[in-house]
Image (cartoon, rainbow, N blue to C red; front, side, top):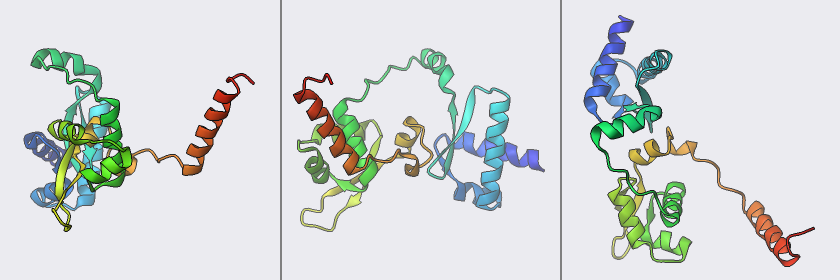
Length: 189
């Protein structure tokens, strides 16, 4: 029965073509979410042991089948995928502000960065890395943004809890002060 359950789970995840939630899988298979997690772990282990060309990834409580990174060049060539331009420093900064503070408004992002972010926000939205999460109940009802499952997949994160911790304020101040002192003294001590 276990092999049949693994085959059903594999079929469902494959057919979905996008991340599918544990709750949905549990409902369709008439299993608990804990049983789905165990089956998914077993399926993932089998793929790894067999050195399959794809892997099972978990993204914010959802599962998806993805090609392994080491075979990307072959997949790219076969599908004639045009490589997207890498993210700019500004895009990484905006993405970090959103990821660590979501949901956020564009004005919050601009306040943190000190510059207009309209173009960068639009670009991240077009790339599917961020999405609209609703509107604030304030005058003008500004949009609020958050990250997507695509963001998690692109940065190999299971959930936002896997984001690296932000440096402590004291460490940042000390680092800047040390850099300033080294610059003033010529950097040679």
